[in-house]
Image (cartoon, rainbow, N blue to C red; front, side, top):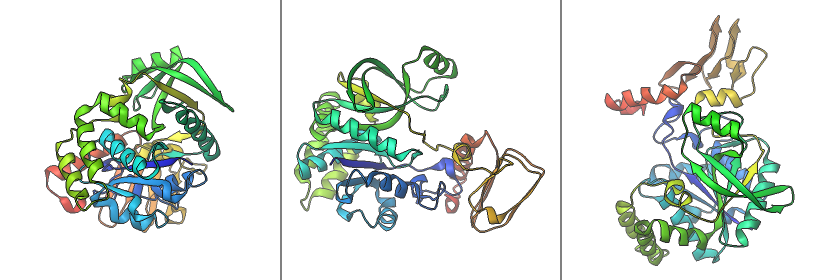
Length: 359
């Protein structure tokens, strides 16, 4: 079985006031009764036992993660002293996989995505692991685009190279940063472009070799960490290395330069749930288009197409439409649907005003 590496960093300012510095999106139960990271782990358990699931997180969130995931061994929660984007995070996890299992396959997954069709997801992931095990390939999962979305990076596919059961595997000809609207429309019209899901599958030594050639400065720090793993100096050496690491993503640092990148196009229902608006899109709604996690707390008088998150207080919506209403013990958010990307501006204002009790 493969290792699963779940990247659980991030602040989650877009889900304020539910998300706070100590409680980013993946630790919230905004999609279902379980928290998002509990769902992410549960999705992997039919493929990978808990002792082969690693979670990389920051010190501020480690205790809450351990509480939410009692099935994951505590030594599998890898703590980064500071966030340095995904390249150092993946490098650290690859060192641990190599130390524990030699050259095993590792699937790198974001902690905070929602996936509808889990059986298809597991089938695609198993096919990717099979391909990755056979050579030094960097395999990524591309999501068939539902439209010209500007919030994701895109991956362009080239020639088909293999087939695993129902899944076809293609060469990657280019990775593109998040496009503007016109470029995104051109990608969709041209075809052969997929949303970058942020999911990667490779052998531990494959990604460490790629880091060595593409990011030698980061690899030098990883080598120091490797020597110190499982020794009393581990935390100190990791802190020193992370103090020197620059912040760089695996896409920009490695994937864009690598030559042997493959893509498996995937059709499972996928969302990165990047905002309250995205949550409304993927939530179950009643006949009036109202999505409410606690329907017993809602009185609707001719309101339409709203999202209500109010676990404790009763909310009465009267004659309004296209609103997002989110209530917590100490804060209330009222936002027009379509503007929820700007919730982070409210968080920035609180930071500027040093109102840290609300962050």
